[in-house]
Length: 468
Image 1 (cartoon, one colour):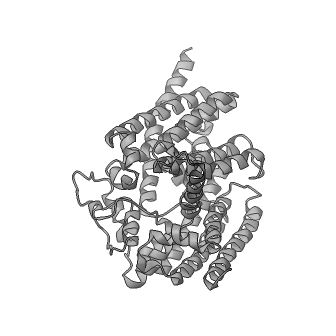
Image 2 (cartoon, helix red, strand yellow):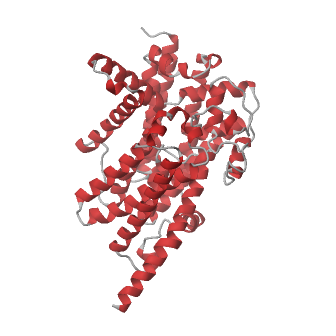
Image 3 (cartoon, rainbow, N blue to C red):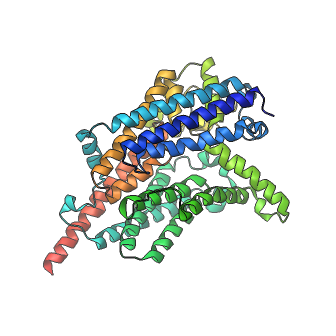
């Protein structure tokens, strides 16, 4: 039987789902039924936590065992759960209004920034008056190979894959000082593979395409984190949609199989990491898998444990007024030269707060817990309260929608479609420090590839063809 707590959570969860449904109707009208528009992706990824909230509102025992158990005792107050659900409604409205406003007109300045900063049309015929599939394939192989080399360097620096898997709970510290390596190969490997797949599929080389995809998924999955491999698979769907065949519906047999694989992959990874895979007791394995699904998928696609900590903590402590962004300034400084360097991942602050500590940024990494909780666009609330909260979500929606509009206007270049797919995973661009650092790294990587690989290769091929 449902109690008052269940009813309030259930009502707010249903309200969120209904609002997202109406947003979807509006989105279908504005974006000509493009199921991979910026607004559509925002709605898809907002539905995941909405259904997570709905599930836990109907199962309070699971809510306590998988969500509330993650936070210190002072945060286990249902008033803040209701407040978090209400602010999720505010976040949806703020973000979607930003998205709709970004659709209203073309922006030449934004288009110029994307062109010059991210080189999204670097492989287009208009850029060089020359386009050759062999060139794109060659560049893709080089980019992928560079990514693999940096991946090997990264794995060697942290002591090998075995060490990484045995110390997953400390990966924020294990990876400290190596973030640039990780960002590079996690961007270069998928980008190179997209260029290769673009050419291979045009030539109907489906087996080779599958082998490239499988290799990238295994490489990304070897990090022990669920997100990168799943994000890559979703990115492939977006890439295929804009370059080969418009997907009219998200519900067909093949796509449903892909969707069902997501929670299965997560459960398998959690069982493997937890050592449950060695159990021969089928009942125990099934029970562990159900618990893993609740803990590793349903709870993780939601974010209530983070939101209640943020709301409760800042009712008793001052807002940070931008101090968590100081990591953007110190990010280029090697930690060997600056031992007290604050984390690039300010989610470490949130995880430390959730454990019952008081944190006032900037704080050195070695004084924080060895893990991180993504604060995402709630970083606006942590720094500037409700005004910052609304503005951050609005700006995030506006920027995301603008990138989508420009990409479609520019006929979805190879790099443009890849960049859009990379940024849209999660729903909208996140404006917290680490994603912004990664965004800057993407710009640097793309410009390095553009000036050191693409341009020299194009000129070489042109001279070679001319001489022949």
